[in-house]
Image (cartoon, rainbow, N blue to C red; front, side, top):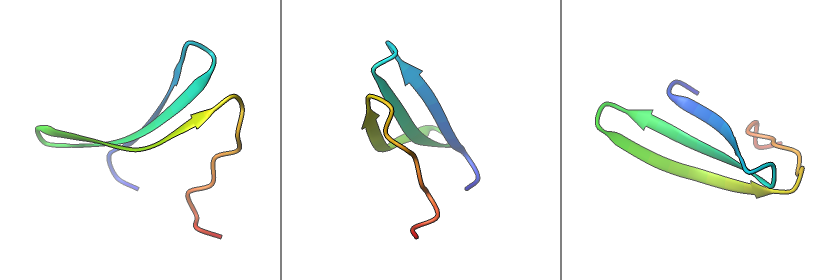
Length: 41
């Protein structure tokens, strides 16, 4: 997905967000090692 970024936060959470021009949209916050699956399957 264009503009998608994923960052860790304090080793307890992962934040997935989209960056588009002057807008940032948080897609999802994952806690404590959950698997990330953006394929929708």
